[in-house]
Image 1: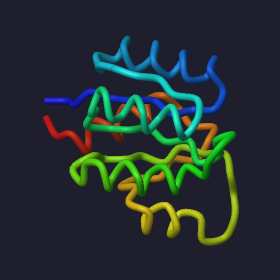
Image 2 (image 1 turned 180 degrees about the vertical axis):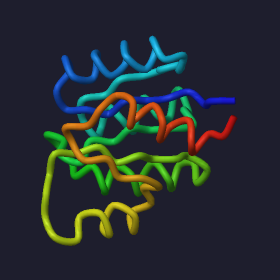
Image 3 (image 1 turned 180 degrees about the horizontal axis):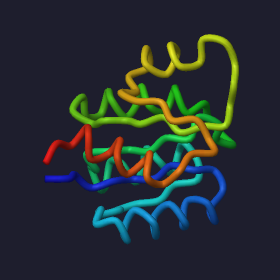
Image 4 (image 1 turned 90 degrees about the vertical axis):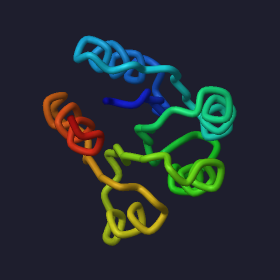
Length: 121
């Protein structure tokens, strides 16, 4: 069974498109957040099983937010989604607790497949 999802993306129109596309693919998106602070508040309220985490947020680094979410609930699975590109970024994301890393731009098929893979049948 697929867990509920929270989308953390600094650009609201992109967050809304992701929500709509994920919903169209049968997923339950329970929250959208555009800042790290908002992500932590909504995570605390909703407790989604999966978080899609943009790494470039206006108020905090997405890796820092990931670490804080994992402190709140060690069972959460965080997928990093970012257009950032620098040496060691994937390693840093995995070290922070992300279980997957998807570079932007990505195809929805790739994201859907990754979510289904980590949730099982």
